[in-house]
Amino acid sequence: MTRGSDRLRQMVVLTTVALLASGCSRVAELMPWKKDAPEPAMAQPEALPAPGTVMAPAVPAGARTAEALDTTTAEQKAAAMAPVAAAPSASLGTVVVSLGDVTTPGFWLRSGLVSAPAPGVVKTAAGQTVQVDLLPGSGAAQLSLAAFRALGLGLTDLPQVEVSRR
Image (cartoon, rainbow, N blue to C red):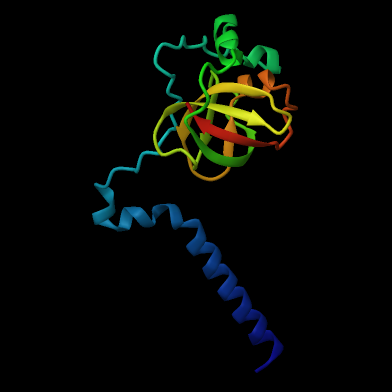
């Protein structure tokens, strides 16, 4: 074969690939069995408050600072930081936590260590504790903005914490 025919073949292949790729969005129209299927809904995680807790106000539009994003009330902060009256009932283990969704108010920990919502306690290596709502999750453990701030952690820290159920 000649160089010219090799180049022509390459151009034809590339053009065909480009045309096929540009029509990808229309492929579903050619599959009648897909037309009636509803789009799968993405599961949105819910922050469930512990019984008797007061929900923090929603995050104001345009909030950009930790202070503006943390809408927990003084009552919630005092309750979360109050000494635990009784020893935690069950240690669930230790996890490295990252900052969770800053627009989800309250004191919570989302982790694979938890199988059902329950009240709990998070304890840092330095011995600081905060009471939280334990929420089931998957992947990396996430701690709320309010809990990060109450524990005095840097928002970019990845601290290891002990998680216990109350």
